[in-house]
Image (cartoon, rainbow, N blue to C red; front, top):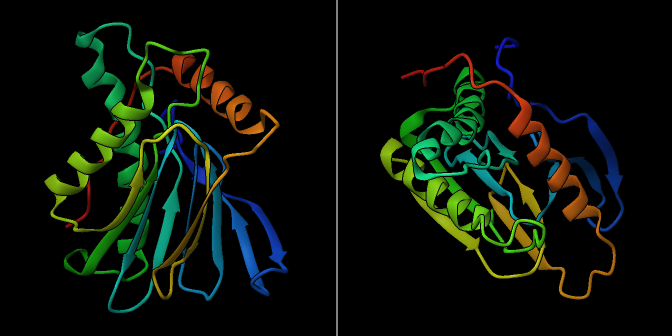
Length: 202
């Protein structure tokens, strides 16, 4: 899969979360993480979307953090959606490789806020939300919870073994870290070639 220009990769930012007294993994744009351990997966979303997917029977779960590539016109949108498809497929495939059963998967989805003021006409958040819901519906994976759209960034805490999610709207956030990260990620996507393909395991 390394040949894919837009390859997602495993998050490597681990720390101890004192608030919950558990090990935590921070999932940044273009990353994902899958685990069977009792830890918390954390991300901060602006226009990007995170899908939190788990096997509700055995407690294996994971999170991704992705954005569709920018599309200048309608003809390019299907190609740009491959970025989102890859992010979803690599997450689900990793879960299945760890023993999850596709029929037992459930998803919780977050993000897609209108926060990238530098891209006022792109509606990238709306496209991300529409994509992830359509993808999950096509794959027959039920959406157990969602917090999408809005105008504020949000911080998401996901506990894969239980499926518990805590979402905090960052209404009074004064720094531009989230927007800067997502803008850099969007720039990387626009420069990366759309090559390669993967399929879901059955």
